[in-house]
Image (cartoon, rainbow, N blue to C red):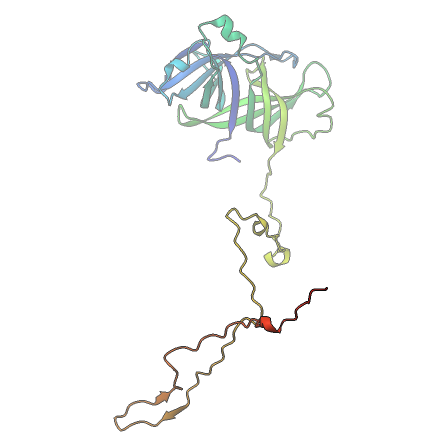
Length: 319
């Protein structure tokens, strides 16, 4: 859902740097950079007669945290992602403005263009994820040379101007069987769209996005289902931790003694009598039975006494 009047709009690109300069919106800050990229549209299989598939001028603004200007040079291949918007200006015309959340450079020496270009990844369509509102529907699915498409509008936060910007874009649906049973989008419906940029519309200069996935947002807050009581749904959980092997050294079991070898001492410690209060008003005196200073020895376990050798029967040798 929108936060403070703005929608999320995320763009992922990978392409070559054309030019490196300082961010014009932050003069005097050397770590704020701007990269100029001609966004390549490699896939020509997706076509609609109202879309032109030329390179799209793109400005990438970033903060060079590591203070490494040598990482970003002309002809270097980069991966960049962040929030974006589409806009027009007198100096740059129609272009994409990307406020990068992250920029990574493909390793290698970009000065050796023949070797560097050979080992760079293949081109891919830029991927967008945007929350937008449906404004208009045009075209038909699986009919004619114009793909079914919807005019959308999204409002995002522009960190360069610290304000909100609203820009239009057009979502196209590729011919085939995938979208045959898809319900038509109603006007003023908020949708969450994921797709790939494959060009610019000819008439009104908008980003043309081929739809890969789409989600609907609820128009009214829905009541949450009732939560079952914890006692009704509570069940005994298996104790898996007690079944784990002991990581320490195993303990030897204590020896078990027979019942006869365990001495039982039963001695009464109850008082034998009391005396009345004395003349000084002292309390009651309790007398205990006399005990010897030395404790009684514990009974020792009995062992059988061996017979005397004289009483043993002897075997006489035979003649």
